[in-house]
Amino acid sequence: MDQEEQGGETQVEASDATEFLVRSNAYDSTAIAQALGDLENEITDEKELAASLGDPNQIREDAKKFKANNALLVRSQATRLRELQKELTDHVLRNNTLLAENEEVVALLQNPEYRAISRDLADIDASISASTEFLAAHGRAGRRKPKHVSLTGLS
Image (cartoon, rainbow, N blue to C red; front, side, top):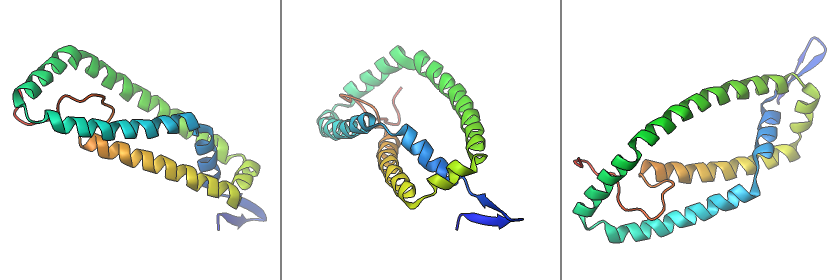
């Protein structure tokens, strides 16, 4: 059970309410449809990639061109993303504390119906994340019309 009696008052765990509010506020059917389309595009890209893997000279040239055109921008973007991650962490933790202090809302959102929706939203997020992480682990995430994969020994 997510509630405890303490000195005649009921203490409510905020995690279920937080989960529902975060997931329901973040739910964007258009973004999910976009993610589905992106994953379908990744499948198409993988099929196209198979055809270009036979020419190591072209792969090497494409890699050199990418480095020359994008190295500074990539470094700048990585720095900015680290800054945003820290700021976002601060805001999320502050908001979690504010929500936990509102026991009436927490109690409402612990209702099984809200928890079921939260689980479904979590499943959607987990499926998209797992696919994205798998693609990233294999150097495939977020690319269109791939020209190369990461190979060791390229200069």
